[in-house]
Every structure is written in C-alpha cells, then in structure tokens.
Length: 267
Image 1: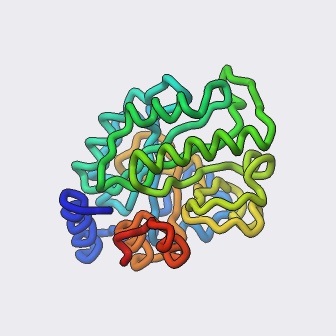
Image 2: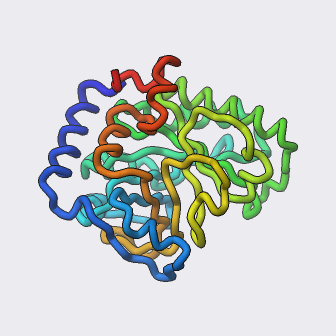
C-alpha cells in the first residue's frame, strides 16, 4: 500500500522518532483542563485536528514540539471545501508530519454526491493517513434533516466504501456521543474509531466501542498553532504507532482485516 514517496516519508518520520527531539513525551497545553481526561495528557502519541479556524499552522514547529499527527478538514456535504485544506495538506507533508483528511457528513444531500465531492478534492496520496468520515448531527448548520437510523447507516456505508476505493485505505470513523448513541451503537464496522470525549474516558461514554484515536479536548494549546485547537491521543505507544503508519490499520485489527485484503503492508 505504501511505496515510493510514502516509504521515503515514513523513513523520515521514523528517523525523527529515533533521534528524540521531543517527539515522544507528553505535551500538556490545555486552556480548560478537565480531570476526567487526565490519562490522555500522558499518552505518548499526541495529535491535533485543524480547519480554517486555526488559520496558518506552523506544522514544522508543532511536529518538533511533540505533535505526531494532524487530521485536517477537507470537505463537507456535496459542495464545501475548507479554504485552508490545500495549503494545510502541502505544508504538513513538507514538515514531515503524518496527515489525513476528513469529510464532514451532512444529511441534506446524497451520499453519492458527497463521495464525488470528496474524491474530486482530496488527493490520493500514498503517504497520507487513512481518510476520516466525521459523523455528527448537523445541529449547527442550516441542514436540519435528521434521517432515521437505517437511512443514516445506508448513507454512511456508501460514503465509507467510496472513500476506501479512492484512497486504498480503510477510513476512520469520527463521532460524538449523541450520534453514536442514536445511530452507531451496536453496529459493527471494520473501521477504526476516533471518539470525542472531553470530560471522561471513552469507555465511560461509549461502552465497549474499541477506539484508536481519542479527541480529549477542544481547548488545547500547542506550539505552532495560534489559539485553541482540538487535541487527540492515539491509543498505543511508539511500536503501535509505527505499525499504524506502515499499514493504515489499528494493529489490534490486522489479524482480522488481513484476510479481507486490507493492511497489505503488514504481511
């Protein structure tokens, strides 16, 4: 899956990890820390997610200071492109920071239209992290449509399949407590999950849902980013993180996903 430029980029990342330079070790910035997520602050693999609100991110400074990855908003619905996406995509790559793109799903347009918009605007870069499908109710937008559970699941699966076809990587599902409760709870997906929980550990809010990434604050402060930024933790340590970079899969799922043709570079 990852060859050529992707392998070269990964060599740079692994060399940086081996050399120290502050890349492994907690960074503590949070304007409004909550004791319920104290464990997240000490987890070794930390990242951020950004959109236009963060404006000009200095990815080199962030990476050098201990930010290991970034997910950035790319598209929303069938016709919105984050105005900073293309610049962020290139700058993060040039800084050597692993980066992935996310699509914010809306419920007022067809999944096929949204998939086409994502494919049109997000490069199929072999060295990118898996794409992310952001699943929430559209409470803060002009779209007030709220499909029933079956319809929502159908749209989600259409979008996930299209994103995987385009990138060759199994997409990550990002979600919050309300959407998970209403739609995703009890549903099986082979995808890695990225869960939002800013006042408690994920198992206290999502039951037995296994998570790969944990969004633990929206008031984070990290070097290279002006103002506040969402901060996230990867579940494992350095060895698991390297495996994830190599395969695009949660290491705990490789044994089950390998026979489906995914995580090919793990073989």
